[in-house]
Length: 592
Image (cartoon, rainbow, N blue to C red; front, side):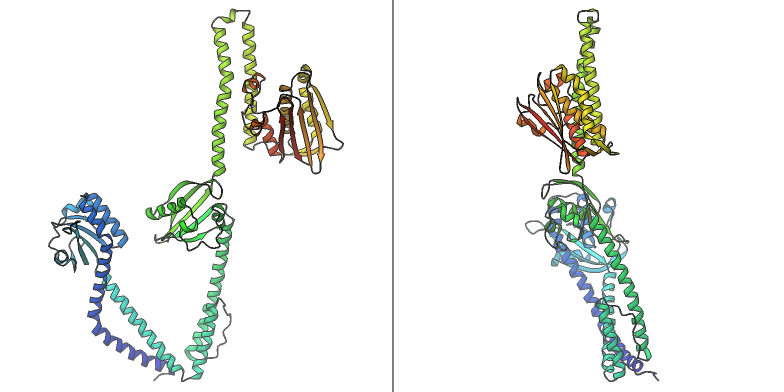
C-alpha cells in the first residue's frame, strides 16, 4: 500500500494522533471556551485595578463629562479595551466607544448584569450583546468608591467576544503543534530502525548547524533516496538563498554603520521603553560618553542628560515629532538643535523614537556677534551723523551768514563726513573678512614691498610730527602666499596707529625677519602704550582704550580687528607687547 517505510509510518502515526486529538477536542472544547473567557475577564479585572483609583479620584473631585471622556479614551488606548465609567445612578459618564456628544443618548446602565454583580459582589462579569456598538462583548466591572468606601460609580472594561474565540484558536493551534511534534517524535523513533534512513538526517542536521553558525555550504552531497534526497536538495537551495540574503544584510548594515559613524550630527534611537537601541559616535563625543556600551540602557542612564531624556519621553508620549534647543555645559558648553520623532513601521506601528542633534553652538555665537556688531555699528554711525546734523541745523538757523564761523562749521562737517566714510569703509572690510568672501585667490607676496608701500603712505604724516621711521630688513627674501591688499591694509593699520599714538620726536621701527619656517613683521613705537588690563581686548571690534582720543584722531575702533581677521585668513598670528608711556610692539607672523 505504501511505497516507503517513511510514508507508512507517517500515515499511521498521523492517523492515531489526529484521532486522539479529535476525541480530546470534543471533550475539552466547552471547558476551553470557559477557560478563555475567565482568562480574559481576569486580564480586564487586572487592568481595571490599575486605573480604578484614578477614576475614583475624578468622581470624587466632580470631574466634568469632557474630562471623564478624556480619561476613558486614554485608558482605552493603553489597555486596548472599551472603557466605560458609569455613575451610581446608572448614567454613563464616559465611554471610549461613544462620541462625547452622544453620551447623553445612552441608556441607563444600572440594570446591566455586570453592574448588578459588581454592586452586590464587588466584581461583575458577563458575556452579552452590546446594543451601543452592536457587538458581542465580554464585560468586567468593578465599583468605584469614595474615601469612606461608599460606592460612587462603576468602572467597566470590555473586549469583543472574538478575543475568546482567538484564544481558543491559539489553543487549537497549540494542539496542532502538539500533533506535529508527536508525528516528528514517532517518526524519529522509527528512524532508529533504519540506519540508511538515519544517515541523511544526521547529515542534514550537521548542515543546519553550520547554517546556524553563519556557514553556508554551497554543495550538499545527496546519497539518500526517496523524500530525504529531496529534502537535501531543498536544504542546499535554502543554504544558497540564506547566504545571499546574509551577505546583502551584512553589506547594508556596514553601509548604515559607516554613514552613522561619519555623520557630524548625533543620532540616538530608543525603543518604546526608552531604552537605547542605537547611538552613533557623534553622540558619544557630544556628551563625553566613555562607557564601552550604552545600548540597552535607558536614555537617562546612558546619556546622563535629563534634557535629552525628557525630549525622548515627550516624543514617545505624544507619538509625534518634538523639536527643542538644548544647552549643555558638560563636557563642553554647547547648544544643540534636537529633533525627536517616532519610528514607525509601514503599518504605522510605533517602534520607538529617533533623535537627531545638530551642533549649532557656532551659529549661536555668530548670531550673538552679528547682533553686537549691528548695535556697535548703529552707535558708531550715530555719533558723526548727530554732529553733522547739529552743525547743519546751526548753519540753517542763521550761522550760514556768519562769515566768522560758517567756514569753521563747514570744515567740521567735512571732517565728520570723512570720518564717517572711513568708518563705513572699515565696516565693509570687516564684514567681508568675517563672511569669508575675500579669502582668495592667494598669490605670491613680497612682504618687503608691502611694508615699503605702507611706509610711503604714512611717511608725510610721520614727518609732520617729527617721528622717525626706521626700517630694518634682515638678509633674505620675504615671500609668502596670500592676498597682497589685505596684508597691506593690516600693516598700514599698525603704522597708522603707531603714528597716531606716538608723540612728536618719537620713533617707529619696522622690522622684517625670517625665522625658520616663519616670517615676522614687527611694528614697534615709542608712543603712549596700552595699559595691561586692555591688552586682551584691543583686537575686538569697536574697542578703544581711550574713546575720546580715538575719535579725535579719526579712529574707527576697527583697525586692529581688521588686522586680526587678515592674519586669520593667512593662517598667521598677531601679538602685542606694550608698556604705558614706553611704547607698543605689534608682531605679525606668517607661515613661509
